[in-house]
Image 1 (spheres, rainbow, N blue to C red):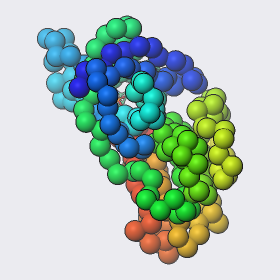
Image 2: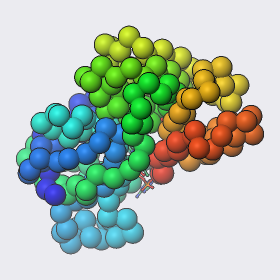
Image 3: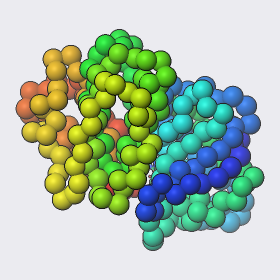
Length: 227
Ligand SMILES: Cc1cc2nc3c(=O)[nH]c(=O)nc-3n(C[C@H](O)[C@H](O)[C@H](O)COP(=O)(O)OP(=O)(O)OC[C@H]3O[C@@H](n4cnc5c(N)ncnc54)[C@H](O)[C@@H]3O)c2cc1C
């Protein structure tokens, strides 16, 4: 589907929110992602021949009129991100059908532990908005590790969630199993979102500490050594 670029907003140093209007209504579930690509021209075909698209988690909510995602534009930029940085209002991109199963569980009372590294906080924004809008009963612990420069991204976290507990860490303090375990209840689902190394290391540590694999939900952002 075609989407029209509306605007980008700087949310923190090097972190931008991109906003598009879709050509027709897009159905998706909070937490899903989509692949975004540029119209094919000789220039984009050469610059992006290896990988013509990037995947972004939709930070918008399905009831919104726009679709949005967050991304880091920290030089040196890839060819793709250079094109993203040069977008002008009215420019068109293509967005794939939304995909992914990093979504809310059906049972609204399941306690949730959301672990995010830096801008991978984006994975949870639509789900948090859904919990606030639908007054879902999930008790949610959001464990967010980041560099101090990313602090302004906190403005994206809905502030009308009475059952949300935030646990904040700044680098170089790292989040390990011992940080997460105290927040896990017997029926909790634990979501891990960040770089591949962060997610896999933490997931392995939690499994070694006795957390069942079936309670862990992995979401990693390729292309970022750290977030
Ligand atoms: C399920 C899923 C969800 C995701 N959600 C998000 C999201 O919400 N937000 C988000 O930002 N990302 C998300 N990602 C990751 C995203 O798809 C990209 O991989 C990521 O943003 C890095 O893009 P890139 O173009 O910098 O990557 P790459 O092209 O792999 O580049 C990686 C790094 O290499 C260097 N590099 C590459 N090419 C050049 C060049 N020509 N010159 C100089 N340096 C270069 C740059 O330092 C660049 O940062 C998600 C990925 C997955 C799988």
